[in-house]
Image 1 (tube, rainbow over the protein chains, first blue to last red):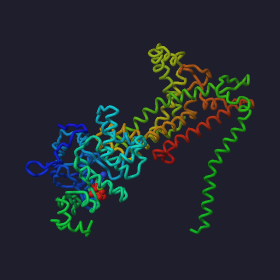
Image 2 (image 1 turned 135 degrees about the vertical axis):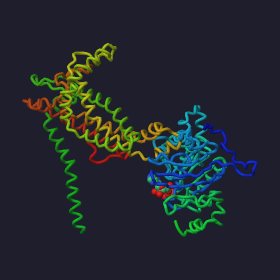
Image 3 (image 1 turned 180 degrees about the vertical axis):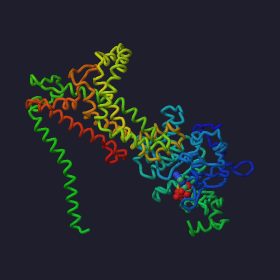
Amino acid sequence: MITLRRPEAGPAVPAEPTPHGRRANAIRVEHLDAYYGTHRAIGGVTFDVAAGTVTAIIGPSGCGKSTLVRCINRMHEVTPGAYARGSVFVGDVDVYSPYADPVAVRSIVGMVFQKPNPFPMMSVYENVAAGPRLRGWRLSRREMDDLVERNLLRAALWDEVKDKLHRSGAALSGGQQQRLCIARALATGPSVLLMDEPCSALDPIATYRIEELMRELSREVTIVIVTHNMQQASRVSEFTAFLLAGEDGVGRLVEFGTTEELFTTPKDERTEAYITGRFG
Amino acid sequence: MTSRADRVFAWSVGALALLVPLTLLGIALLLLVDAWPSVARYGLSFLVTTEWDPVKLVFGAGGYVFGTLVTTAIAILLAAPVAIGASVFLVEYAPRLVRGPLAFLIEVLAYIPSIVYGLWGFFVLVPFMRTTVEPALQGTLGGVPLLGALFSGPVVGLDLLTGGLVLAIMILPIILAIAREVVSAVPSAQREGMLALGATRWETVSRAVLPYARAGIVGAAVLGVARAFGETMAVTMVVGNSSTDISPSLFTPGYTLASAIANQFTEADSELYFSAIVEIALVLLLVAIVVNAAARVLIRRTGAAREGMIL
Ligand SMILES: Nc1ncnc2c1ncn2[C@@H]1O[C@H](COP(=O)(O)OP(=O)(O)OP(=O)(O)O)[C@@H](O)[C@H]1O
Ligand SMILES: [Mg+2]
């Protein structure tokens, strides 16, 4: 059902336009409701993410952005009392099917958190190798070295750490730690990378490097990024979803479209109010 | 507040704080003075020679050192794995409803006075060891080469094995309470980072939580060692206190350093006898300081030291 791919395999869903002229969906979210106990944090969220694109999720604090991305790889339910209703597809995997194993889902969807969280008791090398080791891949020393190098290169970190591969992952700067976390998430070759405010703990230069990296990566990996920063959304994303909590405290999708449209000619007046800074 | 009041306050707090190390230093000096005749006479050989004869006025604490090391080793080998496993269970697996009450219960166990453990050990554990456990050990493992030596000799119940077992039961809640704090102090970002890579719950515990908590867990175990090392009452009541022989048998009715003091301090009728007993106390004090300091450093490394929790 869920097939685990080796890193050399390409994305599950082709990034090229399909014969119908539309790009295939990497992620499809349908009528998604997510709860913390009795509190409904998001309701009725539906949208598609095209493969090989960067999609930004924006909205005021507390509108459910983190909750939404955490539903995509079933990390939401890790919080005690939290659960989700509705459906999410990643490629052709039905994430919330009763037969889907959350552990398997998480292994085809990478995630990068707001605060860099490398494993401090592991070296830089071991941090990147952690995913492949979990998966039980039998790689020779050479193959593993190659895999680590390849993913550190993809995360634009190799040059800075190639001489300290065997130092602790926590001994890097904040921006380097975050790129290490990106390399770690990429190492098992996920088709989707979820990033929840990956730059909010970083300075402008580290932020710039990660934004550049996202543009690079989006050719091979579909990226969904939560951001508070609208400039960031317009710089890196092709599509944007605007989420807003209603009177009832339930976050709903107000508008979804290309980033250009959403920022220049928003259809909904609430979107316009938000992007022009009138609330939120 | 005026700056003068501030200064007075700072000075008095400083003086009070200074009182603690000064007291410790004072105790150590007093012990050293009283122990001096023995220290000067035997030097370091005091710790390794095993003849302890108040009649002939020969004092070597080697047998007590041996008994202490054996009982402490038994205690830590039995208690640490159970305590660490239970702390992981409590933090990572137990339903949230039972977590609080269980944690409270463990802290209560950790504060039970040691005489209570001693009485229970003497009246419940010792007969059980004598009639059931030790004959069974002797019957099964007694015949195995090498290993069998551990379980040879007469079965009395009052011996190093029972002493170690009582110590294990006593230090289990202490290690557990601290290890629980250490494990729950592991940031959830570490757990989520591992889960998000596609780890199962157990993989998350073994590859992210335990490595992160390792220093603190070792610290908790070291604190258990410190406690077992100096524990007096409970172990005195069950350890036998009759032989200073260094024998491989765990069924030896031995002494520990602390039980030797408890048994003999009223009998010290000569200066040398008295100073030999005081020297044992000095050894216990020095070891306690070193081991506790090491444990705190380790626990602080995980950032989980809670003042007052350290026993
Ligand atoms: N662990 C939790 N337990 C209970 N409620 C939660 C929990 N986490 C989030 N919530 C609630 O769910 C709603 C959405 O939270 P979420 O963290 O998804 O918002 P967000 O859009 O990511 O906010 P921010 O921009 O501040 O990160 C909020 O009302 C919040 O109070
Ligand atoms: Mg958030």
